[in-house]
Length: 61
Image (cartoon, rainbow, N blue to C red; front, top):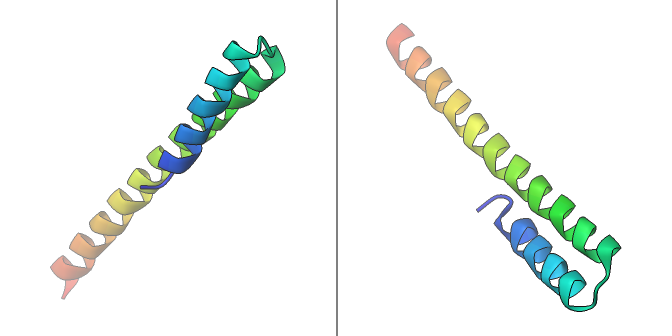
């Protein structure tokens, strides 16, 4: 779920920029999409780290 909204918002901005022939709006849309992707991947990495830490704690106990 993390980043999905930002990616969607970016797609809308990019589309509006394309329709309005507004390069700045298109670029902001692309930046929002990239930021959404980063958030998504960071959330996945955090989940993996959490899962690995839990497995390690379970082995110790």
